[in-house]
Length: 137
Ligand code: IDP
Image (cartoon, rainbow, N blue to C red; front, side, top):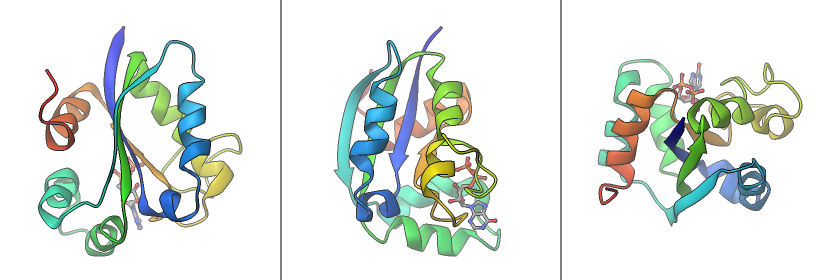
């Protein structure tokens, strides 16, 4: 089942010089391809669209401020079961609960600054890819 997913390497990953490490892990999974990649500072409108489901939650405003605090790497990754697969590579939202070997488990300690976003379903992937890469066919 070939799929496409949206991956964001968050501002903490860029600031900590971890993007090569994280991209390398994704690239080395057999058959997965990075088909678009861009370093970009996100504006409020994009972040509101992307994280709209969390609006009103206590972590929403600090999350948006953090996500706008520096550039992110936005990527389209394609391949076999890539939506589930990148979520597995990332690990759970809380990096302390994430297993060693996962990206969040290896590099994170703070729930907000958890290095990576990856679409969590086919429906989210379609919605998020339209926000970040509207030109994709
Ligand atoms: P996910 O990124 O693992 O899919 P979501 O629940 O969609 O997790 O939350 C989006 C992002 O919001 C998380 O990746 C994290 O950066 C932040 N976040 C989620 N829950 C909390 C929290 O309880 N405190 C602070 N930040 C949070």
